[in-house]
Image 1 (tube, rainbow, N blue to C red):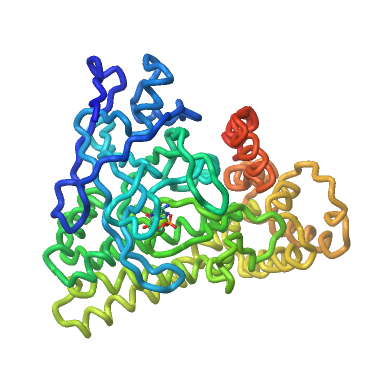
Image 2: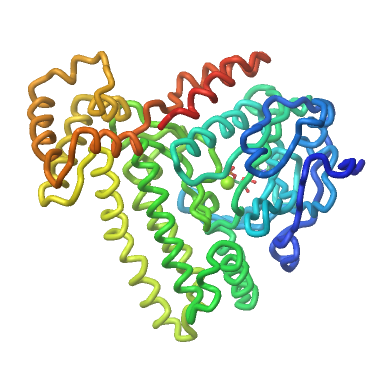
Length: 464
Ligand code: AMP
Ligand code: MG
């Protein structure tokens, strides 16, 4: 394979590949499978800048070579990562079946970002799959992950999408594509499950140490690293799920392989934003029983964390019963930690300062009203922020009654209208990537018209 020559590194890639130095168990050394006729579809200039990368001197043809993996930057050490996962509750050994990690790009000394291609060919983890991805889903991941980022939610991001010039076979023949994903790491609950399933405690300790060095430096000298790690990951996941609930985001496939240890949202499949408020909303057509519905996201996060805790048992304490007891106590805290964070987030959404005894009831009665009246989740909070929403449901008697109690509560604790609005504007989206808008952009993109997507992406930058 041709090595891309950086011509004194115009681009500024700065690879340092710590994960690839882990033992063979953790990965397969493998290169992307070259593609026939790559073409750059979208490049995230703003993210590139943040990563200290400069693509301005590279022509489009060369960019397509770079982002398809046909030509690899110097100092990459490409691998497919091994992991397992509970998919809809069932345990499976998985791994990157269609993704390859180029390595970790360093920005300054301390910021380390995984650069990963998704859709770049088969690996030993592909099972029956073709290792490829279609243009629509890759652009969808690009759009939604950027939207999530601008809604101030932890997420992997998207640097580029190329078309491969090859067809992929799904229900129909589709255009092939490769997404370049940027993540603070791709370590998942499923990564721990993979290593734990091998029952090799040394490898498990290695993974714990690696994760702590990479994400939780504050735990380096901890007395019980595994336990402290569990606590911190639980906190991060609570924060993440509260953020999803804040904006009405439904991930759709919260399998344990799709839950990161860093607390970033990852793997945008059949995910979407809820329109009218209905806690039972699901978007994945295969989610027949609503396992990953909007309101089930917190209990599923807890369930996934319990699977994470199980992996750590052998190193929490050599006495297994004791280890299980301690780990269970931590997992049992989830409910309280989550609910406190959720309540505080909902107070912010309503612009309420301080804590009052009746706050939970006030919030609950708004949610009940939204559900009963099929009120749009995003628009309802926009309406409360004074945005003009042309919908007569906001003039009804029951809503007005609720408005009066909200207004009475709003004036407490030295609040002012200005302070309240400022608080609400920080957390309530003006704009979400509504499904029909995303679909419209993807349809046009499939026909080589990228204008709608470009416009959508620019609007989503102003979503908060
Ligand atoms: P996901 O649903 O994207 O989280 O993927 C679950 C598992 O299926 C992961 O191991 C993926 O790498 C694998 N996978 C998904 N699609 C493909 C494909 N087209 N070819 C090979 N592996 C795939
Ligand atoms: Mg996945």
